[in-house]
Structures are given as C-alpha cells and as structure tokens.
Amino acid sequence: MTARAEPAAPRIPFPDCPFQAGVPSGGMTESNPGFQARVEPCAKRVRVYLGGHLAADSLRPRLVWEHPYYPTYFLPAGDVRAKLEPTGRPHDSAVFGQGLEFDVVVGDVVAQGAAVRYLESAVEEVRDLVRLKFDAMDEWFEEDEPIYVHPRDPYSRVDILGSSRHIRIELHGQTLADSHNPRILFETGLPPRYYLPLTDVRLDLLRPSDTKTQCPYKGTAEYWNVQVGEDEYPDLVWIYRTPLPESQKIAGMACFYNEKLDIYVDGELQERPHSPFN
Image 1 (cartoon, rainbow, N blue to C red):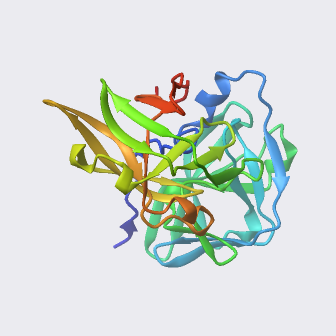
Image 2: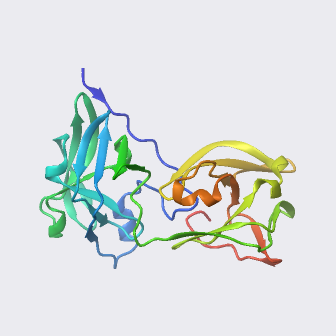
Image 3: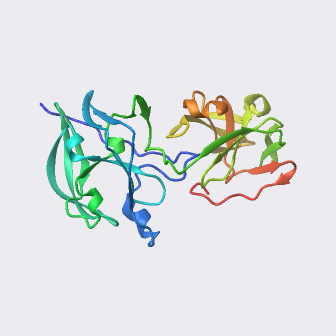
C-alpha cells in the first residue's frame, strides 16, 4: 500500500523574519503590483529528502523570488530524483502564469501536489525548473548543513551586537525586564530586537507557552505568555535556547515583541514599529 506524506502543519509567523513561510505568492505579489520575479544562480549544492530517500540533488539550483520577501529554491528538472506524477490540477502564479501541479513520489511515499512546473511561462528561466514545496519535504540541505523554513536571502543581513544601552520593558505599567547588558539583533527590513539576559527578566511573570516557531537564520524559538494581575497575554516573549551557529550570541536570552509592549531605550519610550505582528 502506498504511504501518503502528511500535509505540513500551518506555520506561525516567526518573530525575527518578515513573513510567514508558505503564504501563496500570488497574494503577496498582488499587493505589490510593481514586483517582478527574480531568478539567480546559486553556487550551493542543494539536496532534498522525502521519506528518508533522496528526492533531489542539484549543483545548479536557482534562487527565485516569487514575491519581494524571501527566495525559494527552484531546481533543474534533471536534478530531481523523485518521480513527478501529474495531478491534472493547474497552479496559478501572478508572476509566472499558469503552471502544472505534480505529486512527488519516492519509494512508497507520496507528497501530494508538492511540485510545480511552469513549462510555458513567459519567464524563460523557470521553464526547465521544478519548485518543490519546502514544507512538504522532510529535509533540505545546503551543502551538508540543514536549512529550515525557507532559503536564506543573500541580500538580508543579521547583525547581533553587544550593547550597554539601558533597556526597560513594560506592559500596562508593570516592568517585565530591566537590563544594561542587551544583545541587539539588527535584521534587514525589521525593527531591532532586544535580547536580554534571563537574570534581568521578571521570570515570575512568565508562563510557559506551547508555541514554537522556526527561523531560517536563528533556529527554533520557544515562547512565554505574560501574566499581569488577572490577565494573561499570549506569546509576548521568546527565547532561542540552541540557536543556529550564526546566531549563538543570543542563545538563552529573552526577547519581547516591540510591537506589543512598551520598550524604553536609555529612558526614552520607543515608538511601536509597524510589522506583520502589530
């Protein structure tokens, strides 16, 4: 009997990355009518696994921006090891036109509708390429290192800097954290995030949350709710206990949503930024 791969669970937006993985590109593009797709070569070896089997292995991947926010890997059709079985269903793209949807079959595992080809696209560069849905596959590797959520954008930068600024965080007048030893994370297109030592945080006001999110630059975040009086506010604080190597400087530190809390920097109340998390 043929096994069926379970559909990926919907992802919760990750706090340090601008947009949720898996949002249909058409909707994003329609809100950005001037956007034009970009296709760029990538020098990394990219491998994809499904059901424990190698589904694709490419030395010629392409980074493709179907929307302005982050890229997706498209792979040459000849580098896809899995069998692609047509579903007969079309797949419309605001930038590539109408494509064809395929099931991805490896051994006895089937990922339904997990591949798309744009064989007659007006964008010539994608006609011989296959897009495998990131969340429908089990593992993605760049060289020998796993990647998560989506490929990292080579034009986005993350800087984590030690600082002596005085950071105080409040909710309805209640101080949640007070620190002179923050790490400030600066990421292209996002407000600065203030990561604070746990010893500078009112841990007695935090309640564990079941929420976990993933970021391609930092790894997996765990969350806390905040208890103020009789009220509990969900998922206002997060922590990367074991971040990816490039983000080790924030390991074990707590961060608070700028958009939802009052943050004072050197005594000055910061304006709450506009972002997908307002």
